[in-house]
Length: 340
Image 1 (cartoon, rainbow, N blue to C red):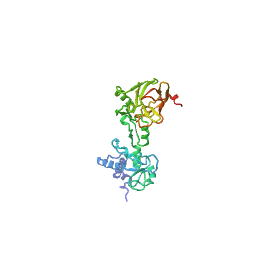
Image 2 (image 1 turned 180 degrees about the vertical axis):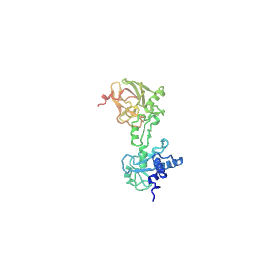
Image 3 (image 1 turned 180 degrees about the horizontal axis):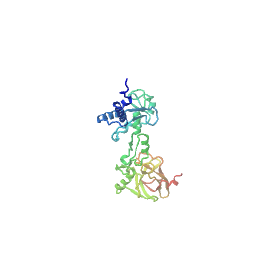
Image 4 (image 1 turned 90 degrees about the vertical axis):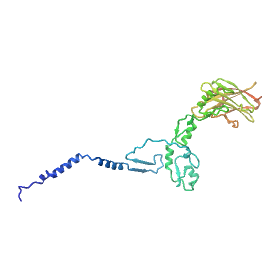
């Protein structure tokens, strides 16, 4: 074999194979651009991979999320929308009619019951007799947890919203916008106590009957009728803030009960009064210190006063008219007269 025409393998690599090898190295370092058609198809494949839904379940009873949904790529949704329920009764237990709260249970037919009702019903659904008390209704629990309900006094100016149930009930018990009724006969106005003060001052300033203004620590003389007519009330309004106070009389077997009440809700943050109340007679005077109770509407004549009244005994009554004196003060101004 002649060695004259022999070419080493390395020399052959410099030919076609060498070109291919060099091109492979170049494409590896600098990948060529792919056509638009290839781009769209590859992106669709990536999106399909990215939108894979992973569900992680948790059967614990903690207040944290029971089910966590994770998307490797968050889809674009429109902004969250508020949902309005025409009636909050759908959030109440259908058995005891109290607001639902965790844990909430359901039977196989989907009927709901709160935890206490499951015990009372001995874990038998009241609608279909199927077992109930073992399967939680997680969907309703999430609705209860996330839902916000406006205060029932929203029409009177309250802007508070809270979760339905105990929290809402607790708020409404201390809501300063609780409705108060105008004490004037045949007036149907109802509003918050501040609005009531303005209404009374603007609408009933010239109303017939005895409507008296008062200033703190200044005694006023007034009269109450003892006949069976409807004239059993005297209305006072404080000159500065406009608070409305009513003095009412109730006739009982041992004598006459006299009550003093501030038309306002009994909640924190609302002004409170005390008073010195006296029954005046020619040779004797009966005087008593009272904390003025906050009430949202005048008492009916059928309502028996409990412990916030002055009892005027029968021997101090004469004729059909009571001559009395009253002096208003802040909540603790007349506390020394209460025997405390």
